[in-house]
Length: 346
Image 1 (cartoon, rainbow, N blue to C red):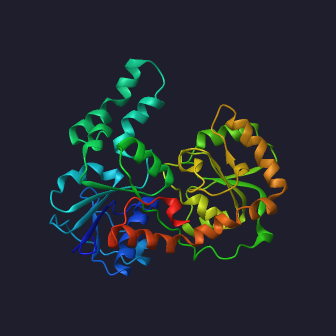
Image 2: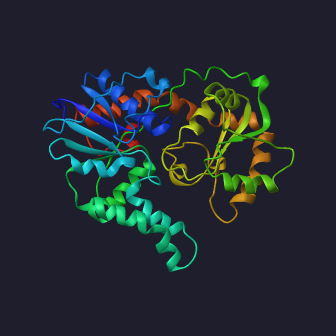
Image 3: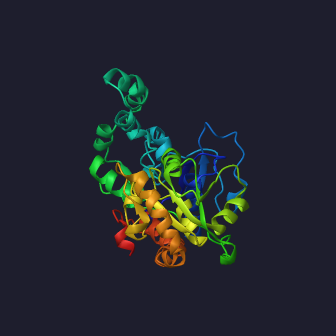
């Protein structure tokens, strides 16, 4: 693929989340490596202003994707139906998440919907019909051999390999860490737990009701970026009991800030390659999840400094992400070494 003329990366313009930032990182890294790469805003977001904070990346936009032989088109899983429109360029799907991927949305809604058969049908017929229309059901995707599958996490690697009967290639991302300078440990409150309400808030609410009343709670919402950084640098624990659809950013940012990251063993949180923290820092997502979390927090807080030191290797791995990402990009787009997983980079 080293002779690719241009590489186009479709993205959601104006959205500041981990996925769009990873797409910026890909284009910027490709250009560092001498490739002619561009972001292309999805037509539904073309009128939205670009995210100013992403100007740190060398990621210029092209107006359209040039569907010609020798070019490459990278499509995130959120716009998966667009990939089938390209007939000549090399097609790649980057699975930045699994739980949010349209291909598997219908069956996940089916599994999570409570009630009888009529309720399940009523809640899931729209995504199932959409997939049939666009040809991206899991069965149809298994038949396509003209698509290269890239995955952001080991969780996604395992899922795509088993569900689509293919060998995907790891293409992770990296966590910018310049803004996370040395934390002032004198200001850290070991009894403060912070969390993202978009990540398992209903479980955390249940934990709060039965937890030690001396524990303080602070949701990360409605904050500026500097306020988020300050909160992570002063809390004792960052708690994430969500689904971990990909290798999430905020647990990594919390660890870089010197806080203790505690996650549920869901999605990427279940994989040591994605979240390499000790067993005792992960909560088993079973019927005892709420009580187990409530019991774990005071125990971890009583020895917070020691528990945080147990995540030193995690912080070191996060700081090395950028160089590893560069190797992943080189393998896929320049040397055509496909099929690598996280353990090939350890």
